[in-house]
Image (cartoon, rainbow, N blue to C red; front, side):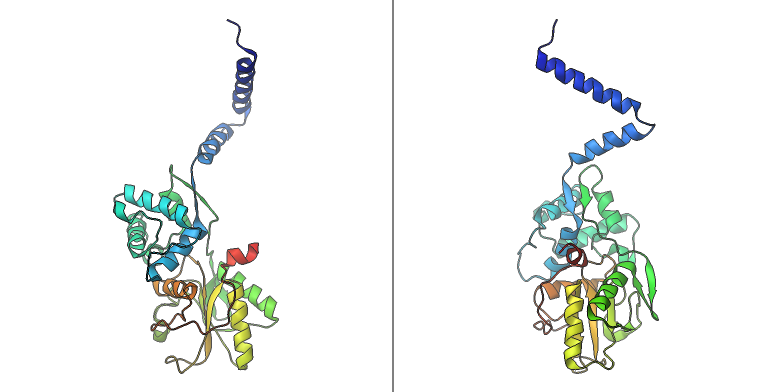
Length: 286
């Protein structure tokens, strides 16, 4: 039977496509098929999900983090289907219950310590989404590197380097990251990555404010700390927003920063310079 012209054309295109795939080097055909399959899956914006996981647990209400709902829902649905989250909490709000469920999932993968705080990391998020969703706008802290006498990760190092470039001055540290128990007054904020205390030795009050402003501009939640606030000398405390190696106390400080607070235990109003809040990734895309 003679096919209609349109049907015949489609058949010819399909046959040509099949022939092209068959002619590809070994393994390429599978890659094409996998790519076509993944294109049909919804995507989780990791930047948005991580941001929500820092902010939502610190809210006094159920306000959703702007731009994060669709991604958080996909994460929560996957956690629900793994019997880690009750269906009533699948709401697009990455609150304490969802954080706890994600931490259980991370522990089920064998993660401990900083790898199981409930803040999504790239590896665990990709694994959670296998066959369900793809992961876009990924965040990676990178390797641990030396910064003077301190240790930071590669992402934090880049952020500090950009702040130094903008300021035209060095930014020596009083304390770096990955320093559990190094300073009891830090309340665990330096236990993980992304957190530094910048030395203000020789800085005037105006300079301290300027440095804090620039640190905020490149993606840190940063505040000038004074001896009147706690048992510590003058310094600038800076937390790299959305660093997936953040300790739980540091995550809370980021959430408070977004909510206009000072990151201290009493949760007072933010006393730092006002800037548009951006992550490092958002700063680079501005």
